Image (cartoon, rainbow, N blue to C red; front, side, top):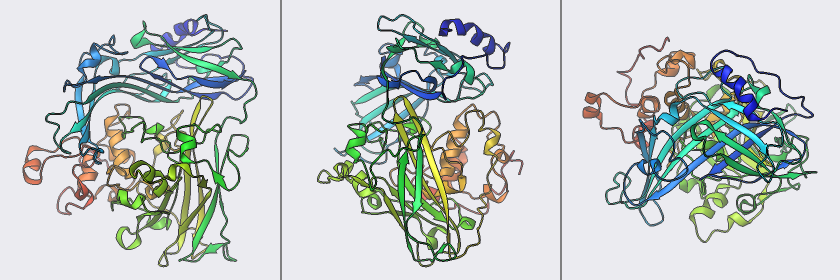
Amino acid sequence: MKSALQRLGVAAMAAAGILLVPWAGQAKASTPVPLALEIDNGEGKPIDLAKGRTYYLDTLDIRAAIGAYADEGVDGLKFQGDFRNLDWRGVSKAEQEFVLLANADGTYTRRAFYRNAAWMNQNGFIMLDQVDARGRVTGEGAVLLTGDSGSRSITDAFFIRRMRAIQWTYDCPTATDCTGARSFEEEALVELRNATTLVGASQTFKLHPQTAAIRVTWSQNLLRPYFVPIRQIDKPAYAYGFQIGVQAITPARKDGTYAAGTDVSFRVTLRDGEGKALHAPGTLPSYMDTVLNEDPAGIRYYTAFFDPTTTYYRRKHRERMLMAQIIGPAQRIQPIRSILALEDFLQPGTQNPGQLPRDGVYSEVQTLPQGSDLFGGAFDPTAYGWTVPVSDIVTFHVPADAPAGTYFVTLKGRRVYMGEDIPATTNVQIQIGTPVVTQANLGVGNCQTCHTNGGELSKVLHGNTNVAACAGCHAPLSFELEGPIAVRLHFIHSRSGRLNTSVQNCSTCHTSVASIQRTSKAACLSCHTSYPAWHETQFGKIESMYVGGGAESFANCTTSCHTNHPGSRL
């Protein structure tokens, strides 16, 4: 049995390059379970764990926050709160973005994002120790190297490493100006997730019978250990793991196809890792049961009403949307640039981000609960959709002019159960009008070049390995313009210093010249962070860090310039 302190010496050698392979861990009595720990303002969120199981840290969220009445950026965090002892030298504002929807009182919220504090950039480590009720070490510990902000290393324990601070301004008079605002929040965030497989042996530990808490010690704040209370469960009602079953219940024609113009229904079944259903046949729990009461089986729906998320900068992995979509035909799949309004989600049934005459591809989506219940419950005080059970049937309405070919049906979600917080996505194919399978030609690929050793597409984000299916849901939303998958991927990869290649080298991800030639504000500003001065004089300043401007950002600017991208290698 080795505590975290005993393993620290080996970890230090690994960090120095002396040891580049995992050291031997203990024999595992069962498949290790990925563990998600949350610490907020110094307090660990209590969790239940299955007695006697072996675990490893897969996700760690640490947050420190304070309120303020003056616009001081995030300077208050240097002197107050849980992160006051960290090294804040070098911190600076990187970007800012307003929330597009107005607050209930007509004011607006601005988010300003801060980076480059010394503690955000430095290499470090996390030590885990099992302790009893008196704080004494009981069982095996683990040491996890966090890496630094500039590159990924073979010794890093997590594929994703993000550390930053955010200033929230809650009472801006307009969507562009916060003059006179008096309501601020300053928060600092640590997000570590997706444990790498190369160092997996060092991360696992078997839960000791006397363990009452997990002590988390972070190298940047050594004098402030955190404690996550543990309750051990002898016989859990469900197994760990998450599976999503999607079964077509509308009969196909004799040749296995569906005709254009057909309504096609699917039954959704959520199961644990051993195949046990997480809900009764025919129904899923209500939104209220999952969000406020935390469904005992671990089913989760959209949570950003209560814990806001922001692409790249804040906790997108905790959004936990349960959602179904169809997109096709495969040979016509492309990014959707038409904007879906909030009002579309307030109507019963499904939504249509992709419409054939407008977008060249058909896509239809449904949130679970459906949008009128999910968003209606948040924005309409007379709505009661949060309290009603959710149907496990999703019906898509294939248009009469749907081209023949292969269509992808996808359902994605996230389960949070007894310390485990994992995604799952299921993709199935149906044939419309023809039994001949058609293929997508996206002009992008090679994801596996970087997304390995814990960062596989089957593990990160939604756990979706079918990139062609992403565009069906990821369209621009009037309240979240950065919705398109192309915008999000450009933004994330260009802001992360851990890409380990130049963002100018388009050929890292793009496979054809045509795939990099479309010119729009959204295409440029999702990757670049500025315009040349002459460009701002002629075409206007940047208004959105994600897409450059507003709804016009998705229109093709021109075909007469930007016909070549320097350094693209295409």
